[in-house]
Amino acid sequence: MASDFWLIAGLGNPGKKYEGTRHNMGFMVADVLAERWTVNFADHKGLAMLGKSTMNLDGRTVKFFLAKPLTYMNESGNAVASIAAYYQIEPDHIVVIHDDMDLEFGRIKVKAGGSAGGHNGIKSIDRSLGTPKYARVRMGVGHAKRGPNAHDNTVNWVLGGFGPDQRKQLPDFLADGADAAEDIIFKGLAKTQEKFNGR
Image (cartoon, rainbow, N blue to C red; front, side, top):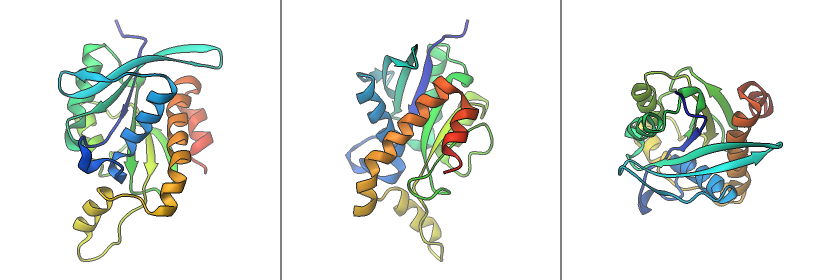
């Protein structure tokens, strides 16, 4: 019997070293949602910080779990699949929020299914859930310079912080990401895509 709970997972890497880096966009959006809906996090099997709450929007109430995997990005699937199995949450009730280098900073795209686009966290979740058919909120972080050290540049880029201009825009951007996750749950994927993907 599938649960009527939703699971929102914000991806990132645990630990001080990674706080505020591009790769931790998912954690940052999860923190915005936690503040909005008064979610208190507790440890789930050492795999994730997990909390539950209810959202009340448009006269409807939805119960949800909010997760920040502690497994490091490349093993995010272990955390997401463990929570989904434990609480019997189907992939169509899962929303994953992650950074995306293919999008300019400040842009958000929403999708379900399709390729992982080189994102190791998404690859891991696809593997662990056995399907890519869950919703994703892709938070644009732009990408590093191409060139001879492209791989190193990329690693340093995603694990780097934001410049002063981006830091100013960050609160609004994170709030938009939180809105996108809520919209998927309350308005469905197609309406959410109309709102965000064309921007």
